Length: 83
Image (cartoon, rainbow, N blue to C red):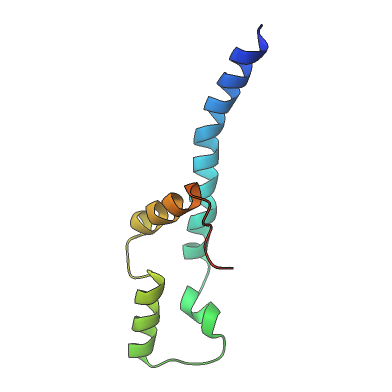
């Protein structure tokens, strides 16, 4: 059957495509103006210490690749984060 090799080949090709899409979507959050803390707090202004604490609690003080690897590991286990 020629169907099985075709399906295997398509599945193998889809792995890097899904990875690139995940990196692209994940990185869009960093490209938007403002920070994730600004989006969460809205008009409320936090003291610099409170903002630093919130950034640390959310893991936003870590490098991009570390955050992506952490998210990817959780996503593979079915945990896509808090909505």
